[in-house]
Amino acid sequence: MKIAVTGKGGVGKTTFAATLARLYAEEGKHVLAADVDPDANLGLALGFTDEEIGQIIPITKMRKLVQERTGASDDNRFYRINPKVDDIPDTYSKTKNGVKLLVLGTVDTAGSGCVCPEHVMLKRIINHLVLRSDDVVILDMEAGLEHLGRGTTEGMDQFVVVIEPGARSIQTYGNVKRLAEQLGVKHVRVVANKVRDDADEEFIRSKIPSEDLLGFIHYNPEIMDADRRGQSPYDVSRSATDEIRKIKEKIDQANI
Image (tube, rainbow, N blue to C red; front, side):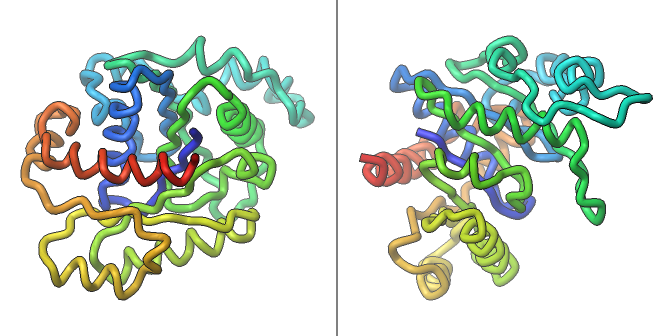
């Protein structure tokens, strides 16, 4: 199972991605969660401590590693576009609560069309993760899908957009769906988070096709408390975890 989770900042996609990873680990699956969000906080949501997180350097910030693998340097503008990356997930990941965390980081490509060594490494690693047949791989992405390409999306089982009841969040879903279609992805599914009442549910149902809607996660102060304390939602809120468990069942059924 290979799942990319995306959505605009603040909607709770990291809470969903981390809890989903913990649920697969609970079943005894080999789970690798990759943080590809510039605001990297997947580790805390998985249950890592601040001290443990502080010891992790994103792969895209490992200048020496990137140079070694790509052959790039300050005085060499030519580099390999297929660097060796197959050892990186096991060598540079950290394990907690049965989940391997790999912090990939991101590369700022806005306005530059950057095809730099760091970007090449990032795409190559994501592609490798998607092809790791023995693992459940969950990618916690930023709102765009710039780091993905046609070769990567061919192996992706699910694209999940986390939204909240609001026009801007719905717009993000539309943008991601359009980008995904350009990459050849036909099915982009939705999880609605921070749902308060029946009116919110009805709003979501009016905007999202029923076949794309995986389910609802209701507004839950326990999740906010977990975030303030730097704890994993999985360890704090049984109700939220149970709602995500039901969503996971739909994801699993779609992959049968």
